[in-house]
Length: 324
Image (cartoon, rainbow, N blue to C red; front, top):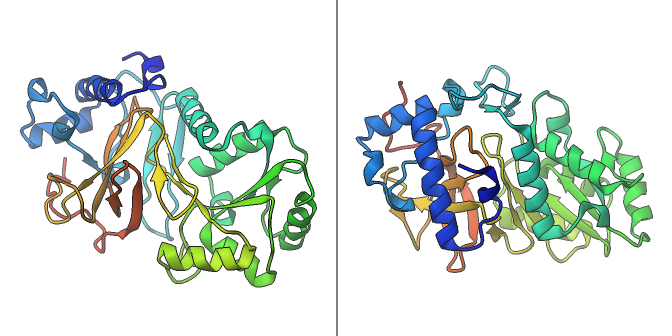
């Protein structure tokens, strides 16, 4: 499977052709995924369209090494978790794939990072090792070539001063932050920002009560004085991100696609209603590109999607194949 093909997808036909090739490769070389498919009695020879490809429950990343037998781990990304909880571990064999994916994906929505100042407010991620989000944002910050770009941890007053200073810059500023930290910031001071994009990455991390997106975005719009809140949708187990620039509607780069599954039958896809989010991430070539997440969402007619919440239970209902 040529890696270049993944990032040159232009049509739905291109995507399906690449997805089927990636499925064939991962079925052959990723032993956990192959065994999962076998337990579902999937005959790889009969899989001829995306809808027939099995999606691996994301919880497998907590209990198994999901990696091609041909590859070795170059870097290990690990999810955040409460003390004593089991975290997801993503074994990445080619860091260049991740870097190409997040750089190209970001540029398709926001243009070159060099046209921005990027400020990052990600305290819960900076306080631990192995965050794929911190890796991505750190690289984007370096790409800006701006003396003003950087991470902020326990430096609230400095960050406030920097936001006011950069409002007068000839470059736009992107403030990317975890939800609870952005809320903490606007409780310290209210803003009226005209030259700044506010992007939340989700997650209260146990610091605040969970809020639905509409409530969160309303609070952030009011606190920062902006008309829209942007969002990033990504996770430790993926190498690609979707972005929302307004109204909570996420769009994927050409090598990523979201489908929804029936909430009561994890093996059945659904449309036109709330369902579990299944992600196809073709950049995740040497791990698993077909992942059933624990998020709930809904597809829009134009192919964009909304995130509406998460499953109540810790494991995805409808799948009893967790012991491999």
